[in-house]
Length: 380
Image (cartoon, rainbow, N blue to C red; front, side, top):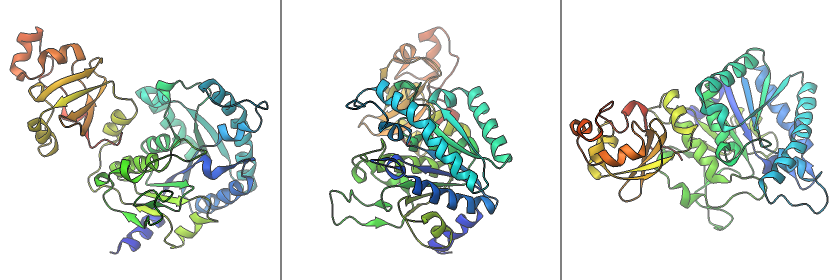
């Protein structure tokens, strides 16, 4: 089967889709682009009529509120951005609600912080709410709760949020609407000879830092965050389609067979939803530096990380917190849940597992990180 026919088959068989739209697409210098919202609702309504579940992750609240702030005020700090979001979120949702209503559809609003997905019970509450909304054939519209999020509880951008929602709703397709025509082999703003990629087969092998430098002027993500989100989606076994949201009726066109944007092929070997959740819903609290033998055991052997392979511990973390696993050359290898806090980890690093009890007076775990709590090639 050709890549194009496989893409078409996947699009036509998709039953649950997460669509993310960014501020650079959704807003102009005058505020919300109402015509674009209408065209988006039209296209999503067509998919909805085919029986497809739609979850929309929408940016735009801060940009929508910017025009209404007092004259001369700048959004230089977090409280100002949160205040602008508070103004803009209601305006944004009003336009979505009214537009979807004209197509006979009901929409709902869900505002999230990272804390809502970090704790398992709250994660399950979000999953249950979204499941019931989709069962009722409602279109949930999700955004970060900018008005209350503090830095350590921010998703950072809605590309990150959308990638996490894929796991929450068990989606089988991710469409990311951006201001670019797709993914280029290098930054087209700085390189006139940059070439658009019709598809990416192994996103984990790409140097995203080199490919995607810079952010969009209006949004907070840029292509790097979109590719990182696509990398995460690929690990879940979910394909990503990165499209220009400014192209008229682009979603309708791709479902009719037109080859627009860039198709990101999912990984053949998928990670479990649990590993995905533990790897991406928290920020790593520290680093474990490992030697080449430990790296080989993890990458090639699928083994747990043992204290003997650790050469250094960085950061202050507790047992059960997420940590990065990094090679001595500085290359990220994995993330995982530490069996020991940083204080104890410093005491047992470089030692064999059968020596742990003599060092600590107890040995609850022979591993530093068990392989069941470890995700290789994490897209951080």
